[in-house]
Structure formats: C-alpha cells, structure tokens
Amino acid sequence: MENGRTEPGELIALEDRWGAHNYRPLDVILERASGVWAYDTEGKRYLDCLSAYSALNQGHCHPRIVQALQEQAARCTLTSRAFRNDQLPHFVADLARICEMEMVLPMNSGAEAVESAIKAMRQWGYSSKGIPAGRAEIVVCANNFHGRTTTEIGFSSEPLYRDGFGPFTPGFVSVPFGDSEALEEAITPNTCGFLFEPIQCEAGILIPPDGYLSDVAEICRRNDVLMAADEIQTGLGRTGYMFACQHEGVQPDIYILGKALSGGMYPVSAVVSSAGILGLFRPGSHGSTYGGNPLACAVARAALRVIEEERLAERSAELGAWFLYELRKLRHPHIREIRGRGLLVGIELMVPARTYCERLKELGMLCKETHDYVIRLAPPLIISEEELSWAVGQVAKAFEA
Ligand SMILES: *Cc1c(COP(=O)(O)O)cnc(C)c1O
Image 1 (cartoon, rainbow, N blue to C red):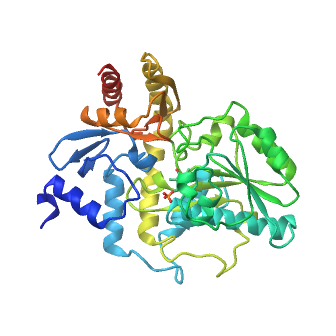
Image 2 (cartoon, helix red, strand yellow; image 1 turned 180 degrees about the horizontal axis):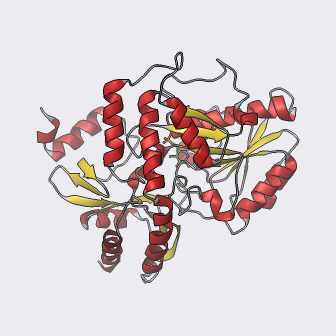
Image 3 (cartoon, rainbow, N blue to C red; image 1 turned 135 degrees about the vertical axis):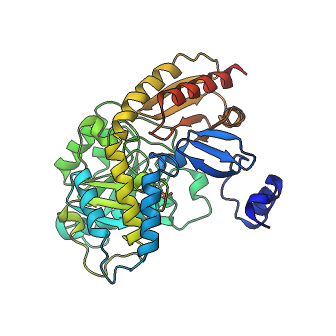
C-alpha cells in the first residue's frame, strides 16, 4: 500500500515489527515539513523545537538547499575520491574560511567525523609530538556524547550507551566536565588531545563555568595537547555564535562538525583543522566512499551560505536571549533550572521530562527530553519572533495543565 494512505496505527505496527527498537519516538508520524513547522499524517501541524538535534538550524526543506540538492542530484552525485569532483574544492575552501582554519577532511556522519578526529590526533601525537608507538592518550569528559561507534561509546560514562557492547578501544582517560584542573592533572607526556563538547547537549544542556574554555585552551597549548571541539550540535550558529568556543574567544586546534552542515538534507560531516594536523594523512591512510561526494558538497555549500547570509548565529543570539528571559518568568514547583545559550535551551525538571514532552506534543510543539529530566528547546534558527512567542505560550500552558 502507498505510504500516505496507510493508517497511523498500521505504520507504527509495521515499524515496530520490522525496525530495530533502538529509539523510543513520540507517536507522531511526520510526513511533510517546511521551515519551523512539521505536519503529521492527519495534517496537524507542530512547531519543531528539536530541529533534529540541531541538524535543522536552517529549518526544514530550506528552498535554497532543496534547490542545490535537486540540481546536483540531476547532475552528478558520487564520483568516489578515486577521482576529483567540481564541488569538493568549493566546499572545503568555504568551510575552512568560515572556521578560520587551513584544512578540511569531509566525512558523512558525526560519529565518523569524531572517529576521524581521533585518528588525526593520534597520528599527530606519534609523528609530531613524539609519543611512543601505541601509547597515545586522549582525555575526554564525563557525560560526553560523541556518537555511537564502539570506540566512542567505549569512553562514554553512560551505561545505557556502553553496557553489552565491549570490549572497547583503550587510550582514553575521563575527567569531570567543566573542571580544568582535572584536565591538567590527567595530562601525561603521552597525551595527544583533549576531546570535548563546549556545551554538553545530550547530557542535559550542561554549560561549563565561565572561563573554562579559555583555561582549557591555555592548558592544552602549554602541554602541547590538541584541543578538539566537538561542535556537531553546538556549532554553525546554534548557541549565538558560529561556534560555541567563540563565547570565550577560543580557537581550538580541531573543529568537528556535522548535523547543520547540510541543513538536514543529507549526512555531511567534517574535521576542520590546521595543515600541521590534517596534512599528516597520506593517500590511503584514511578514506570514505561517500565522504566529500559532489551531492554532499553542493548541499553543504548551500547550507553554509544560508547560515551566513541569513545571519543565523546573530538571530540565535538575539532571539535566544529573549526566549530565555521569557521562559525564566515561568514558575512551577517541577522546574529546577532554565539555562541556555542562543536558541539552545534546557528546562531542567525535578520530575522526568517525558510527560511534559507528550503534553507539548498535544499542544502542537515537538520536543524531546534529554537525559530524562531536561526538556531541550532548540527550534530552527530561522524562527520568527511571533512563532517563538507562541512557543513560550505553549510551554506556559504545558505547565498550567
Ligand atoms: C549528534 C552528535 C554526534 C554524532 O553524530 P551522528 O551524526 O549522529 O553520528 C557526535 N557528537 C555530538 C556532540 C552530537 O551532538
């Protein structure tokens, strides 16, 4: 039967019967979306306040990105890196300029970009820092989220991500997030890098104390350790700057990007760094069949152009400040704290957040709880003031009920 005519209950049954159950989605079946709005199979519309974990900073189906996708899809989609293509050069040049960096390594998923950054840091550790073979260490933070590969979950502190999936890759040391002294103590002569999120999103929108990022930059520089910022979720305008590290004027050695790099249109990720680090890769030492394909590059170029030309980082800063100010007027015994940077806001509750997310869904707003007790509010950055003000009203209603 054609997808559009299948009853919602039947669609859910099909998915649950044939699909692996590695997610527990809200029972809303989306079939089309535009800008900040998504529509279910019954035609009910919802304000998307998750934005696919910030992959949709540019909004759903942004016309300029759709156009780039359609045009490139009809022209040339995949060449493999065995040959050159005419889109990749523009993409890497644009992204390097935006990051104020020298080199770009294009990949597909965020998890793959993190893996690639780990390889880059280790390689630099051996060939530039002189770490003995097989001894490189990378410091990570407790409560991190860097993706789902076996290496990445191996240095996660979340039992749900790890349990039953070992054995894991050695060479990682964990320190508390937001504690720069702990980082300094964990560094040894074999440490090649520090991998961190400038704001821990999956852990519940945890914002480090002021001065943390600049302290980290200073500690890494002094100890000859690479500072690798996983900005897959916080980057590309989400927190009110192009990159969350810029809140403290910090330029890390490595940016890891994904999600909004393609505006929700296609999986595109990248590691962005200096020639001294990414320049160490030799032909054959790393690769990806789809990484840097012309379709991905054309889409990413359009996605980046939208972020810059529509001034999405500035919008996020302005609208986010207002949003946070309005939300903080809410008074309810279940609300423990409301925090945020730009249009990345967490409402931490004293009770599990799922009930509130279900209630908001009924009120026409899509949100997902993060770390059980936090409602994450992260609408597309193209949201209008009116729509944002409507969102504040719906959140208030959810807490009145
Ligand atoms: C989403 C995310 C990843 C993983 O990206 P995928 O595309 O899901 O593999 C890694 N790090 C952070 C901070 C993320 O938010």
